[in-house]
Image (cartoon, rainbow, N blue to C red; front, side, top):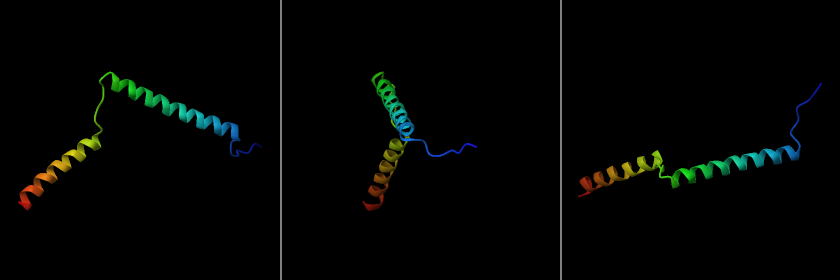
Length: 64
C-alpha cells in the first residue's frame, strides 16, 4: 500500500518556483501588452469613477 503524505521540501520548493515563474511570465506578458497599446482600464476603476461622478452631482444638487 502506498500512502500519500506531504511532499518533501524539494518538491514544495519546485512547486513554489513554478508558481513564481508563472507569475513573472504573466507580469511580463501584461507589460508587453501595455507597451503595444493594448492597455485597458479595469472595470472596477471605471465603476468607481462613475460612482464618484454621480455622487458628486447628487451632492451638488442636494447640498446646494
